[in-house]
Length: 272
Image (cartoon, rainbow, N blue to C red; front, side, top):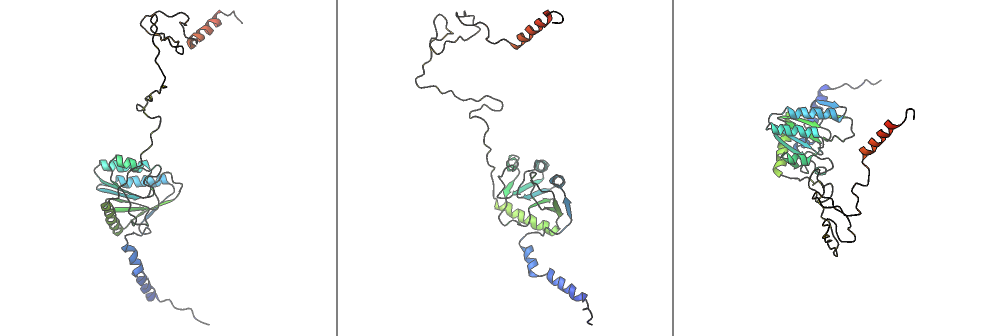
């Protein structure tokens, strides 16, 4: 009967050390893509909890907030960036190429608040979906900062200092490349020529080519002579009312109808 082979602890340790220092592992670090699996991980069961954590990380920054994400739609995150800029923190944003101008993207708000926003270069850390460098601490997120997402699980990882340095260097290179992006203009709502919010549309009237203005009647200057415009324009200048035109409005006023009903009810016999 054969005896089981003995376990050589020294040989196993030597093998692990050789794997950890192999050229394949070093090559991954050389391309500037931090390993998202390292560091302390915090799971979240919905985007709302993740958003609250991201806002707290941004609010805790004193010197800089460099954010990189493919798709940014959440208003609370953008509001935290705006408040950080108001506190004179260095705020800069990198957005993905495909979704920078997608529906509900906050690119327009970032531009309006004069927050420097650029496009990600094509070779910018492809293994990272979202990252936040708050001062010298880097946080990695396995998803976009999109409040419309249907995902129910997210992970936020605390990156190592080496990863934070790599991300900072890559971010500076991307900003130096200066891939500017402009928000897509929002189409105007309503008819052309509106006078502003709540105003009426200023649409010029189009008249037929053979149109001739009706001349006023000499006896009654407010009555036109044209056969298609036999109307009386009521004014406060005291002119006499032409014959055949009603003096009262054709419809009875609502309050008069109510008053008439009340009078009929008061004059009706008891029990009627």
